[in-house]
Structure formats: C-alpha cells, structure tokens
Length: 155
Figure 1 (cartoon, rainbow, N blue to C red):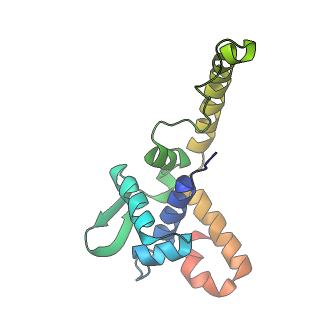
Figure 2: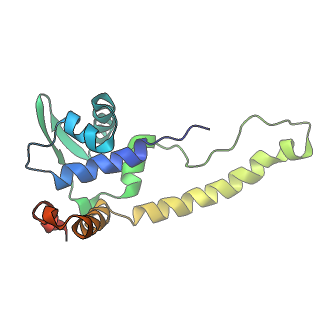
Figure 3: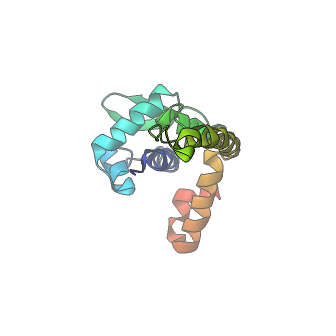
C-alpha cells in the first residue's frame, strides 16, 4: 500500500508561507528545502492550494500568500484541496463473491468506514492552521530561542 504525503506536505507549505511571509525565502526552491522534496512537487501542491483558494500566487514572483487567515483554514480545507472527496480509508473493491467473508465484507466495512470518515472530518474541521503554527512556534522557541524574532508573532 502506498501512502500519500501530499496532505502533510500541503500543511507544511501553508505553515511555511505564513511564517516566512514578507521575506525572500518563499521561492519553490526554498520551500522544497524545508519540505525535503523537489520544487516541482511544491509547485504542484501549491497549484492545488491555489485552485482551492487557500493561497494566492503570482506568476514569476516568489511571494505566495495565504488567501485567508490561518485561523480560517482548517485541516479539512487542506485535505479536500489535496485529496478531493477521497476517503481516508478505502474498502477493497475486489473480493470473492463466492466466499462468506468476501461476499459481505465490503458492505460491512463501508458502513463502518463512512462513520469513521464523518468523525475524522469533524475533527479535522476543528483544527486550524493557526493552531498548528502556534505549536510550531512554541516548539521552535524551546529548541532554538534565537529564532524568536521570526516566530514571535505566533507565540
């Protein structure tokens, strides 16, 4: 099974854009170094975030901005921007219909997975980018107090 890191990377990019706003550290190359991915991947994710109206970008200018305040961006907003309406967990559509388990497992799991999806989405709706950035700032000040000037607004 392959896991997508796009959601995590998108949150990372949004937090980076907010923390480094009004600096010269907002090129896709600089963001890619933070995410430890390639700039093309950053641009691809940023394109999705832009289509979902979470960021504002200008062609040829490395100055992306959040389109809303961090307090208005939820994890659910970011998830839907990256994954669309895909559920977090999926039922295997190929099971043996001639088997007791195979013939019924999809229906049983779908019912439970739908309930779980709803609960996860409710939780994601309650977590904002602002909350995450504040936690990043608090951890950073503990680890490297010299960066206080950069993150002071988020403490």
